[in-house]
Image (cartoon, rainbow, N blue to C red; front, side, top):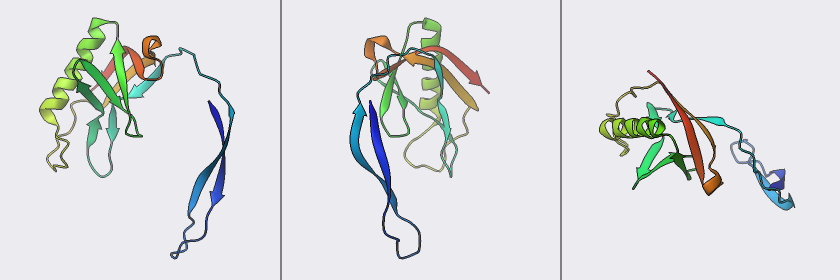
Length: 137
């Protein structure tokens, strides 16, 4: 879906800095993306200030990738080797990290975790199908 957005510069704040925001005007068209090109996601991200964190969660039997917006995208896979790699990452993350604002978070074992994904045709827009996991120590 394409939406037309217009930037609006609001009034100047007391400290002299601009206050800007976008204002929704209208939907131009409702085209749905249906492509299946592979793309990469980084599972390790930096939080400044602080250490790199692994942005992977597990709920029941599903792995979830945490988006920058706070939303979660389900990670599915068809290859058992890929499933085992995700399990290895999850187990390490559970054993070594705390998400309670503790200053004792350890440095990650991996400097980079990149996964190659496509949109999962069984759950388009809500899940990615993982075809490859690359771990860099």
